[in-house]
Image 1 (spheres, protein in one colour):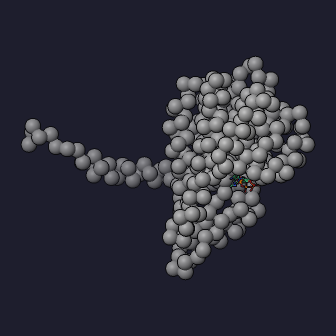
Image 2 (cartoon, helix red, strand yellow):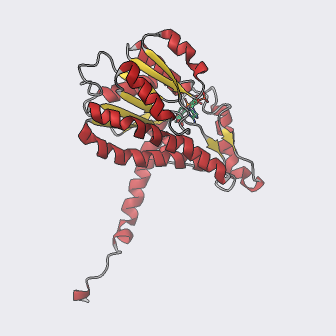
Image 3 (cartoon, protein in one colour):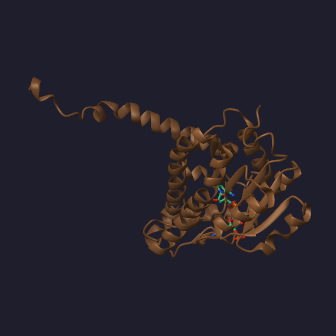
Length: 290
Ligand code: NDP
């Protein structure tokens, strides 16, 4: 395997991580430090990052970054360049979830979800791209979800944000490949983090939806602290994919994600084949032959 996310002049890769205060982001930082990499650990509250800094003070830069706050991404990238001279891997990890039916989700909640999970990632991507283009190397990792490939009742807002992230990432991958920049979409299943804990936003209940969404609400409660996935191993899988010469566009993480995305893709293909004759029979008739 070839390490192509950093060049040979760089002593060790630099990982820039959003939401490093908890869950995946914290595990990504620990993994990177264990590998000897350098880390720009960012979070809304930098006090939550002091234990990471203590692990390797000479290889960690801690910086404040709320991905919804204008200008903070640029400031964090500038600080990373001042300290380490480069960024090799930018990980858009910061995010949270919403549970509720479409009708139960106030527009302000939906917009806030998009602000963090989608526009936040776009802001960081736009802040880091000029540097990656100058380097002619690097990678952007966008942490989506299996919910970025498929959805189910109660997860509309969350999936909308992750579908948006995936659509943007798919185009971005083509736009920046000529600059030697990789884009990796990560689609985890259930991993042991705080996602389903206090940070999860439960929408006000409309009684009519109880039988429809109740199962999803219950699922979120029982999922907390029982998830099978190890975020540290997720970091290792991401690193393996990034170091491969042919990095995939999408990497599912966990047996549940692999199974769900496979079943969904098969269903998509089966529907496409079944309805293709109807779909194709929509051409404007050639008037010359009428
Ligand atoms: P956690 O709740 O443990 O971590 C979420 C992180 O995002 C925290 O560090 C939090 O910071 C940060 N964050 C939230 N909002 C902002 C913001 N506006 N600016 C900066 N940071 C912010 O959950 P996970 O580790 O699971 O979540 C990380 C990513 O993984 C998310 O994008 C999530 O959607 C995705 N994911 C998780 C799955 C899982 O099973 N765990 C499955 C699929 C996807 P703070 O400490 O300040 O709250």
